[in-house]
Image (cartoon, rainbow, N blue to C red; front, side):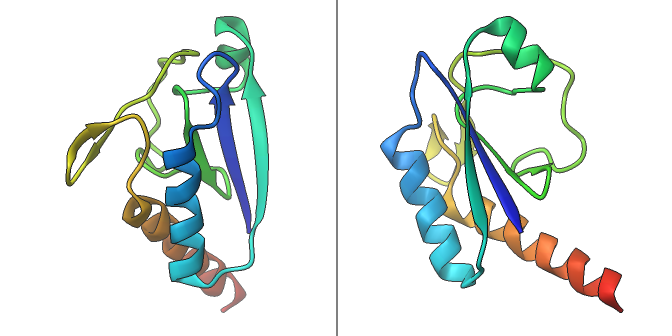
Length: 111
């Protein structure tokens, strides 16, 4: 499993986002390759289909939008609707659910 953690050069990776990812990995007990991708500007954001900083994808699937990503790309801060309100990082449960869904897809492929 590959997890892409994309972030903007201007906002950085964000301690809270990295902690949420760590918690999700721990909760799901999955072995995953985490790749950090820096986005430098709006043109880079568009070419990488970057939805804002941070954006986390599990096997290419965005943790918030799934495979229904919007066509609006930007290099600024991204906000997620969490149980505690709007935050500039996803809730660990959102990441964990996406990891579990990816595991189920992989199991279904294997038969």
